[in-house]
Image 1 (cartoon, helix red, strand yellow):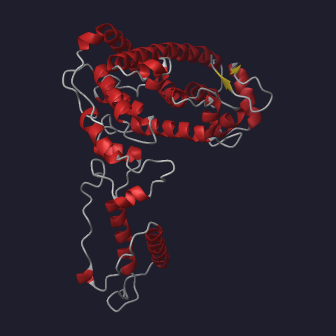
Image 2 (spheres, one colour):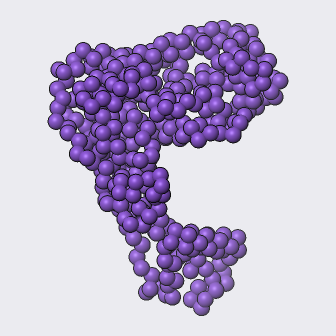
Image 3 (tube, one colour):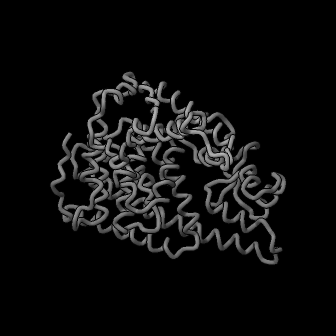
Length: 400
């Protein structure tokens, strides 16, 4: 579909826009100067990942997500939990990169998993070239003065076999073994390796999609290119939040991906970071959108959808300010217990862990601090943390 980018005028949303811009700016400015910034950012990743699944109608407990992220699951992970963890890892990846990385062709290709076939062919060819360069032929005999690394040769042989096997499994023709240097074709250029976005999907790529769960005629590459052409570019003099609202609404209407629909909210948050509105963090947009009724977020009228986005952004920023106050107060209270403590005490590390995670368990504390579970339980008792689960087993603690 073709998305209409004409309008709207900022005057149509002046009240909502000013309120949302004010809350978001205050949050980022306070976060830039706060000692609890690291803990706030890490907690925001967890809360936003859970909210992303909530928006899609799936319930994921944040306790399970924290333990799953630490590879300490107490039960078999569900499909919803693995999807929430994918959102968590994607948020961390976006935040660890440059502010405009996620909105570039290279970044978007990496986020949606579009690895270029050209790059794969180049890597396979490089591996096979290394195998062809092994000693064994008349022209490949090593000099007597040069030592031969037998382990490296064996590893090169294994890599070559794995590369050929992978090509056969992918249904690609086996690479021709060159007999001499004249037969070696130049390696394909890596320029435009992420150019799959914007190019029609090939028959081979479409055949890899399962027709039972994915529409074979859904051209994700063209849809992504359409969104990136406008949604990934600055909108002139438009306020940052209005530009993010347009990018979010365009993603909702174009629906570039049949899977990973949650990626659009993260990209909309990335536009705020690119425009310098949230330079200190990646805005937790999902936590605000979950407070807005679905009928308004998915309304037929664009004015209603954009107004819902601005309300959600204001709600997320307001909740972030309250969370920042809560973390700052909790830090002050817990640090009072460090008085007259020995210098090698584990309590300071536990305070940082509690501030960074929504919940902690004895196993998680023992793993992160390198102490026994009994010692971890004693440290938790010294900080007087609140037990959050109300269970006798697999208990978890946090700050209120």
